[in-house]
Amino acid sequence: MSEYRVKNISKLPMLFGQKQGGLARTLIFKVLGKLQVGSLTMVEQDETLLFGSKTDPAGPHAEVHVHDLDLYRRILTGGTIAAGETYIEGLWSSPNLTEVTRAFSGNMAMLEAMSDQQNWLLRLALKTTHWGRRNTAARSRENIAAHYDLGNEFFSLFLDPSMMYSAAVFPAPHSDLAAASQHKLRLICEDLELKPEDHLVEIGTGWGGMAIYAAEHYHCRVTTTTISKEQFDYAVQAVEKRGLQDRITVLFDDYRDLEGQFDK
Image 1 (cartoon, rainbow, N blue to C red):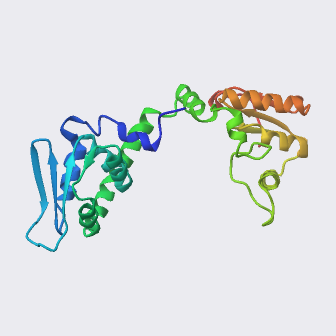
Image 2: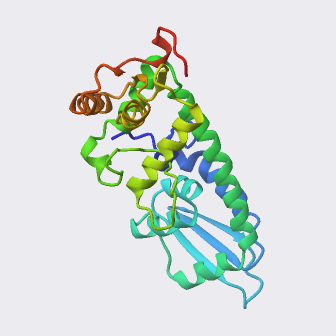
Image 3: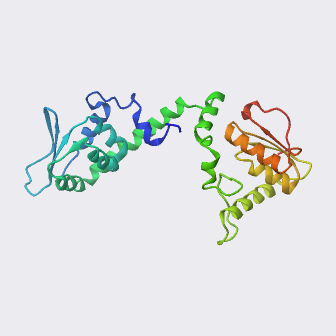
């Protein structure tokens, strides 16, 4: 399965070097510098840093011991959920967790600022990751394989029998997914005003549901192409099973390599 997921983009070394906490540590400390209620003491090995003020005896005064500098990257990219996860994993500890909770609860504006930093960095990381997987012909095959070639049995667990992967249109509140998928296909074909003399081209075969529906119900010719090997094999078998080889051509080609003329 592909490792290019939103959860994993935080691992980009160019953005979050782990040496001395890197950029993530700097940004976290910048946010902690806005702490207005109580104080937070960060203990890192032989260094102790104080954020906020201890002058108010009634204010929350929290102490956090950092055991792994990767903590900063994790929190910056994962927010409060990551704070809990990293505590369980032992990246940090505290002699008084209640005070830590009180300190952050009393500084919601600071947490919002941290969220803004997180969102900005995630957007930057996403752009960087997407650039690295830009849509060249070769990269497209890798991207598609990473998602759609997980196995047809896997997708059959949650798709309808026609294996439609896009949003269904429910004709009635009591309709099931299978009926809604067929209804959606009918609406698409009606919008296209398909006729028997039409030659329809479909970019992105999926598992062949659209091509089969159009050929069976509107008797048109369909040329459909995919770069997913799993989907290609499934669609070819589905077409052959229904005896539609004379009306449906399934290609294992990039859409940029398509040749010919089509009506719709």
